Picture (spheres, rainbow, N blue to C red):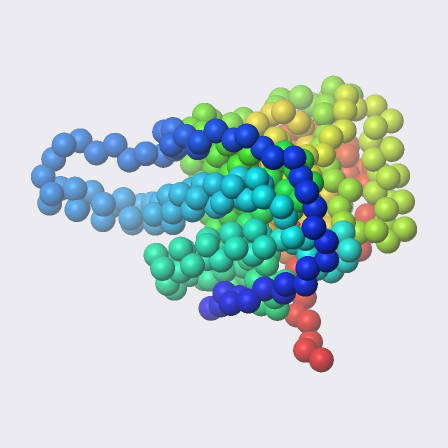
Length: 334
Ligand SMILES: O=P(O)(O)O[C@H]1[C@H](O)[C@@H](O)[C@H](O)[C@@H](O)[C@@H]1O
Ligand SMILES: [Mg+2]
């Protein structure tokens, strides 16, 4: 089982003052798969719970993910009121803050307490040197703050993203867009929801009537940036109605699931950015592909998620692919 990082890197580079947000208190989850039991004897309730556990083995984990994502979101919203110490990871534009590290610890320790045999892949644990290998274990795939750059600058789209896989298959995803206070959830075979409302992808098939969402990423290699821009130029000139970016892959995927955009694609994202969104998109009727049209692979750092294959295939024609090292590459220790 993969462990939890006890310490994260803490090199302080700069401090940024941001506008403060006024946030309303979170509302309780409305109708998210609540179990309604008729008033009955304790024996029947116990029997019902046992049957339920067998037919719905990950319900408890899912409920816990929703609760802990909401709790994490409150921590993030509170942190937005204060000055942020910004540190960097792989490059000067790959940002991390103490809030990312703190929130990941909160999530992992609370899950560990309840489900001691489960494994974890967390963005900040991996940054601290923990392996990023998906095994058959029940595994929580965590991005504590998706949209760290947004968080640092006070750009109001920040999400807590929790995906959960068993036998390497995603079972559920929870994305809490904490500034908007929107709880997105998806469970394999059970649909996708936002605050209890069922989500459905859009039915647009004509690319010229579509809105697409993507990101510029954090790779500043000139050749890569040129490819990103040439792809965006070609897509804009199809023409599509619009091209957007929220700064968080998890939120972008929830926008596909909600039907607000037809597709999201990006090269360079990580498994923790998209694991939860992947379940939410597919449960809302969308599909996931590799950016070359092949089957999607969680560890590939490539994502095309769309409302339908017509839109996905049309976009794939325009994507100038560039290399991104897989998440599960085992790095040799020097
Ligand atoms: O904010 P994080 O969790 O680091 O994830 C974002 C990533 O850093 C950016 O490069 C991507 O463009 C975003 O889509 C990610 O969500
Ligand atoms: Mg992320």
